[in-house]
Image (cartoon, rainbow, N blue to C red; front, side):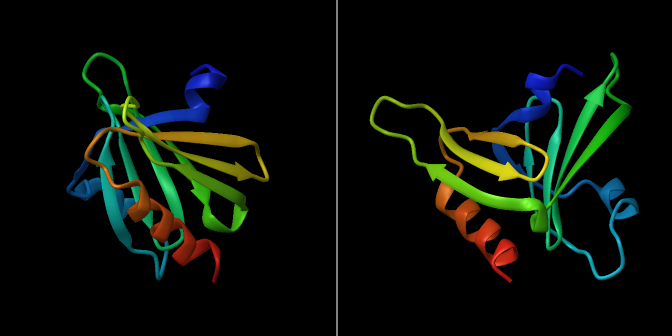
Length: 121
């Protein structure tokens, strides 16, 4: 996977938390919300953001990225304007910057609260 695609995702709609995510969760970790990308899923837990990158023709192979909330130094959110299609969230972490675009209909302020609830503990 090239570095640009690692740093940027677009979330289209909220979805059910995939059942196989439970295998990834640690003790006292629970899935809060999940969102669909084109082929992948972003899962927000009470400890981190998990990005699943489905690979191959069938998508059964998956690479998983975790962004722990305690690695987030600052974040910004930008709501969609009159001519903008996507809202955006930018995360600055100890590892680098990540951008999450939200399609129309996905509430950027909901993400703001979700991130704040866990980063500001």
